[in-house]
Amino acid sequence: MATRLVVVGDSLLDRDLEGTVERLSPDAPVPVVDDPKAIARPGGAGLAALLAAGDGCEVRLVTALGDDEAGVELGSLLQRNGVDVVNLGTTAATPEKIRIRAGGRTLVRVDRGGRWSGSIGPLTAALEAQLAGADAVLVSDYGRGVAAEPSVRAALARLPARVPVIWDPHPRGPQPTRGVRLATPNAKEAAAQTPQIEGHSLTALSECARTLISSWGAAAVAITLGPRGALMVDGSGTPLVTPAPPVAGGDPCGAGDRFASTAARLLAEGALATEAVSGAVAAASAFVSSGGASSVSLASSSPKDPEHAPALDARDLVERVRATGGVVVATGGCFDLLHAGHVAMLKAARSLGDCLVVCLNSDESVRRLKGADRPLVSQADRAAVLLAVEGVDGVVLFDEDTPERVLEELRPDVFAKGADYAVSDLPEARVLARWGGQAVVLPYLEGRSSTRLMEEVMRRGHS
Image (cartoon, rainbow, N blue to C red; front, side, top):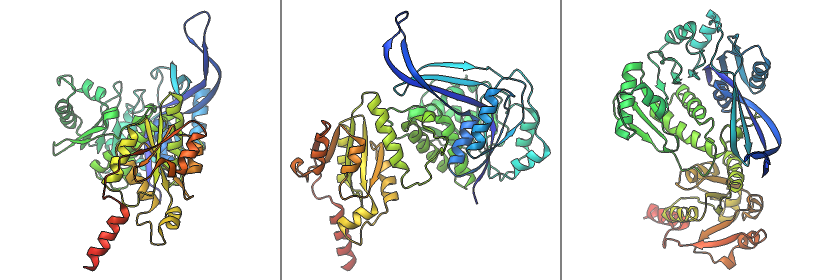
């Protein structure tokens, strides 16, 4: 049975106008964006709900959409992409955020519709019962009125203790209702709520979190720190710091919604708050790396095949790094048992450019190369371990004996291998030469190999 998640909050319509820039305007020193293509998607609580639906959750979104063109379009987008929308209704205009972009970068943003100027409808008894039947409730507050509606707050306050409430606050919104399982302010929001605490050190942030736990009556507070990850404090008072993996380029738009929706899903599935925060940091970092909100596909907001999800992210990452003039580095191998030699080589490879993509032999490919008893670790687990290594930005699976086909698709600037190879022996060197890329070898730690590790395990097992 799918995880049942109710998202409560303010939804916006995000619209990107993506074009190309090749010249400046003759009447002002501004770029001319040619032939922009309009792409609309849900924003705010709508984006959080969309991402959760893409993760396989059964999602109901309680929001307030205006009876205008933007509201109709936003509601339709959400319904078509697996989100059951409960519209409280409002007499205000549905807010829109319009970004004019070129080359993967935002040039200017235009906002339409400010704070709610009209009334919002109350919750019904039937909807309150649906809230109580959820596996978790995420309040995605964008300061426009839904989280401040008295009937909404009363329903949230009456939720059974077994239903975790995750509250993503906003400076213009109300305080969370007491008893939430996890509140997720960013550093700026946390500082605004605790002006008596000075500085942005870990000590100051920890004190901010403790103060918010007391004033909000929350079980835990996780302060999101952007590229630095998150700091969480619970009733024990001891801070947990979860660093974010390094991200090359990317777009942070929507990262907070990705963090909150992931944390809500994990708590709904029974995870501890510490586990939920760690998982949310990893998900938000991957989201930024893949292009942020602009990378979300409305046909399917999240890859359905988890074993091949890293491949999709990596290809998108390569395009974005290349669009900003960055250097793309690739390496390849089976990585059946990751050891110190692998880690040293991967870090060295990452130092050669702005992102590192690992071309990973699939299980079928490893069996052909190494024998029927290999690999010992599945391709999904090997990919997950590689992505956890500092400096690895993406993983692409391939079924052939060598990654030549994948390299043709990615067209990296550099292909690196350990120095147990010679460049003249690498078929990849000939492939990279077709587009002017360079194959290199890197220092290799002597005595480290997966095969030797397995032979030693077998020897000791028989001794």
